[in-house]
Image (cartoon, rainbow over all chains, first blue to last red; front, side, top):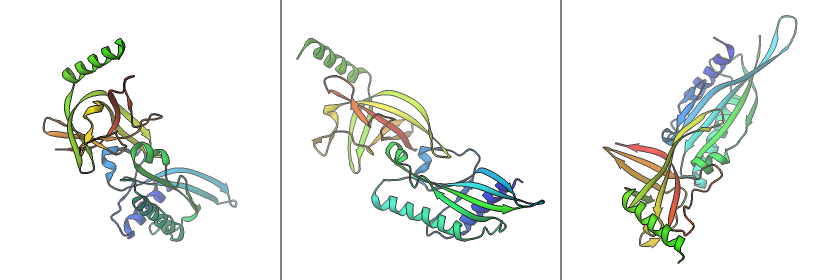
Length: 141
Length: 125
């Protein structure tokens, strides 16, 4: 299997094995399509995004794999509910940033971007919270 | 009242008489049963930032005078729910803005009818 898929799977496994204080099931997807009706429950979607590599020496390259983690839920957009979901995003970010992936320890998380922290257009048009984490994992091979 | 307004009122009454179905309009625990015209139904695919969100968009035309909650005439609000029963199912729509448009607008010059934008958010059996 492609390394980027292995890393994405490892992210999914890690998230599902971690207690974030609420039920959370992360799923890997190539083309995540969701019905708005289904978004009442928390959706955590892991999607391989991009990769790049640079030569390290004669035999090895440094690869950087980008993995998107989308956290989404249709909610009553009160301050408390939104604060709670943003806290979850931070917990996920902190966990992945600081821990090696259990099922792919050779990948090291070197960067986490949270952009957008939340999508205002989704809140306005769908009353849905959407936050996107882009994780960069470095692998030498 | 000018001639055009008279015509508009007559047309609106005909629409209400012949082109409406019963719905329940809900805001929290407040609800009213009234008659509405389904203005349009479209399917929408939205950019969900790495994901795609699909939903059914539906407009309802409701007489201004009919939207009364707890004895008070009111304006539609984002987040209100419209429940429409069909066969053994209840389709639930939420009042939401649509693109650059707010969640509702008057559908005529004389402010007799609301055009309310909604998206389907639930389906109950």
